[in-house]
Each structure stands twice: as structure tokens, then as C-alpha cells.
Amino acid sequence: MTSALHAQRMQECLDACLACLRACEMCAEACLNEPDVTAMAECIRRDRDCADACAFTARLLMRASALHPEACRLCAEACARCAEECERHAAHHEHCRVCAEACRRCEALCRELAA
Image: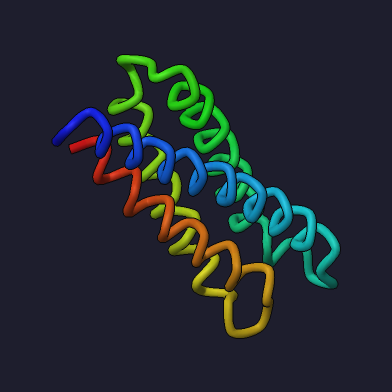
């Protein structure tokens, strides 16, 4: 991969991480306002884990850290776990559908950079 292409992929992944971070934070907040918040507890936990992984990965990508492939692997796993849980609620909660989509996109781009 050329350095220009790699830089483009890193920027795409960074953008996806930031979008996913935002979606996860918004989803967790919306889950806290659901009538049966206890039913959303696992979703909130995974949202928070994913948001933290995305924030960490984004910071490493911003400075082109040599550690970014490892961070991307972790982030992809957090995104997959979050998307899996959000997909369970997506039919009933729009915020979960939006979050799951952001997670799947971020997961795919992180897996590319981690390879």
C-alpha cells in the first residue's frame, strides 16, 4: 500500500472512529432514558466500552502512532460487540440502529488497518 493510500485509509478510519464514538455516546444516553433501563444495561455497557475504544484509537490515528494497528484490533472487537447488542434492540430503538450501523462501519475500517 502506498503511503498516500495508507494516509487516506487512516483518515477514513479516524473519521469512522469519531462517528462511532458519537453514536455510542448518544445511544448510551438514550438508553438511560428508556422506560425499562435495566433491559438496556448491557447495551449501555457495550456503548461505553466502544466509545472509549474509539476515542483511544482516534487519538493514536491522529498522531500516526506505530501502535495504531493494535488499537484498531481492539476497537474492531469493541465495535463488533457493541453492534451485536445494538442490533438486538434496533427494531425498537432508532438510537440502537444508528449506533449499530456506525459500529459496523468502524469495525470494518479498523480491521483493514489492523491487517
